[in-house]
Image (tube, rainbow, N blue to C red; front, side):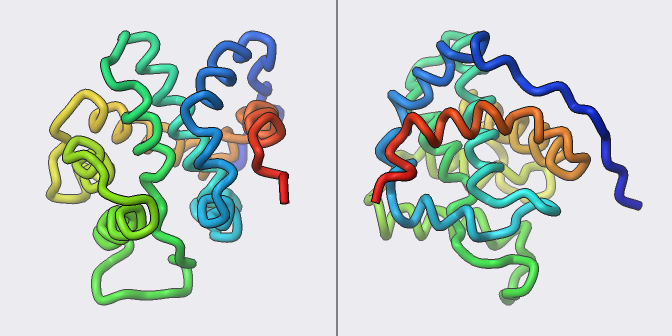
Length: 181
């Protein structure tokens, strides 16, 4: 059964402006990167693409970091943006291991191959974001925030509630260098 919720109220851009600007300060370079942009071509949850989901998750994580006055906010938010940097169509491309368990490892491999080494906390965040389905336990506040935000946003994706984020998403892409070149 596929339940769609109609008439979802969009987020208020003016109320989100401070978070949008902080988000761009942290992730502008990643959003203009060709491979990060390519995440938009991969379907993730239902009709939601991987880039939209990842921006939504990392934006929610940013808001949590601000609320909790978390240390290393930039590291946490950047890892959250890249948590699903697996770069394959999981609906059709199969691996020896189920996607739930495979994609965090593939994301870490791709990040380190393409962007260079990440911290052990960032690595744990990404590898543990499928907890409790995966055996990897979140080992930091950032890992727990990513895990919680991922579940929250995935649920919203499947029920079409994440459409409420679309104006913020469009503003983030418009203000970044996403559309350049």
